[in-house]
Figure 1 (cartoon, each protein chain N blue to C red):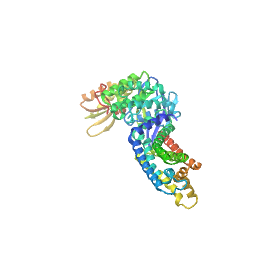
Figure 2 (figure 1 turned 120 degrees about the vertical axis):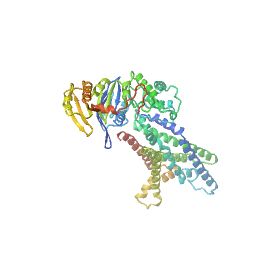
Figure 3 (figure 1 turned 90 degrees about the horizontal axis):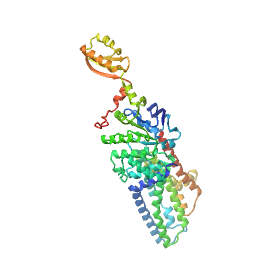
Figure 4 (figure 1 turned 180 degrees about the vertical axis):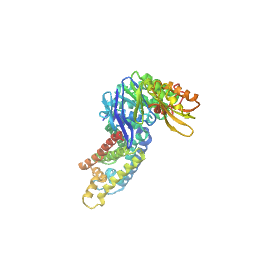
Amino acid sequence: MIEVRGLEKQYGSFRAVRGLSFTVEPGEVLGFLGPNGAGKSTTLRIISGYLGPTKGDVIVDGISVTQDPIRAKQRIGYMPETSPLYPEMKVGEYLRFRAELKGVKGKDRKAAVRRSLEDAGLDDMEGVLIGHLSKGYRQRVGLADALVASPPLLVLDEPTAGLDPNQIREVRALVTRLKDKHTIVLSTHILSEVEAVCTRGVVIAKGQLVAQGTLDELYELRKATAVRIRVRNLPAALKSEIAALEGVREVTEVGAASAFVRLEIAFESAEVGDLATERVVERLAAAGAGVLEVVPQSSLETVFSELTRVDDSGGGLAA
Amino acid sequence: MKGLLPIYKRELLSLFVTPVAWVVAAAFLFLQGFYFFLLVASYATTQDTIQGSGPVEAFFGQTALFYLPLVIICPVLTMRLFAEERRSGTIEALLTAPISPAGVVLGKYLAALTTYVVMWAPTGLYMVLLSRYGEIDTRVVMTGYLGTLLVGAGYLAIGTLSSALTTSQLAAAVAASGFILVLFGVGFGEFFLDAGPARTMASHVSVWAMMNDLSRGLIDSRRLVFWGSMTLVPLFVTVRTVESWRWG
């Protein structure tokens, strides 16, 4: 459905996207995950045809976004992050305008607008001025706009950003309803969002692909292959003793101060990491050393630690 | 030209549901009405009339009152076209729809041009009034309106371009007014420059000279070509500007 090939985007001297490649299969709900400033919006804007890539290309349904933007855009329903809308128009007026702009024929337009209003939960809002709508309702108008021409592909940039927990739940329920009819790409910096609605995730940081796969695969990748431990009062003989523990491959001292020593303990494999960590900490404690800090080391961990975790029940707020 | 019609309709709607068009049209008609009153009053008290001069000719061509409102009005009609969309971010939704940049630019431009024509339309009543109390040459009226349309088309194209070059409506209006004034000023060179290429150029550019001709029923194809280019070149540059935003 989408093929992103070696995408690069340069703003002046800043490289927002650096050689990004991934694919989205038909019927997938792809979570496009990354910390703020990772290049998510830039990538989605290139897919939607708003920005041109400095290098590389995006193929949507076999059509190049750079070579044939108009035909590619016909297949995409895009919702920008802030859903900018014309405040002087009524909701229905705006959606009829958008439907016409997207080439929905006159006789089908009324039905298309009706359906998108229903799908986005805007049934009674047709006659309301956009300028009078709350943030949550504007977001829905943006969604209705993305849906109005029934495109096979939906690209949603942070669809739940700035919404309250109830609204977030509603948007997620909507995405779940829509995934039978559309292939969906949605970006987020919230981990639980991907868990709640997506079938697969692509993780980027600093404009580069960090990992991709199903949710289980991503969790697998997060497993630490090493830990860094900050220890107080480390007996000199203990280091070699720890290195001999089951599952531990190597122990190196990576830093020291007057009050503590920092050790990096590499495991034989990521699978034994949890068990080995337990053994190491137990051993240290038994020997009278004080464990001050245990930090798992994995390629994904730093990225994930920057992502916002939100309680899925809606109790937390998206930062 | 994909997208021209829906954008044209939306722009007209937003021009007329916001007070801008109404305020501008009201101020414009007040000025033109006052000016028409002065002209008619002056011609009514003049004893001898010169051939080729009368209220209609004067209305369209022979005083500065015709141009002064246009220097302000055309930029005000076009200032929001692109500047506002880029400031508020709605341009992102617009340009991710399957439309061509030329369609966007022409749709917006034609909406401004339509508003301009609608604004002038009530002045047709002046001609009806005059024809009831005296004779008027309908061909002169028509060439007068042709000139009005040409000048407006050019000024609005300049305004459209300047709106695409900035995200501030005020800056867009000021820049367009400035450029129109410069163009107007160059035309004045015709009156004080010595005979030579500079003066020839000035007289070709002069909106004054063109309106003078047209208000007497004279159609000079060189002027049509000049004002045609004054319209098409800014619009073409606007289309390229809109295309260039993708690569910013």
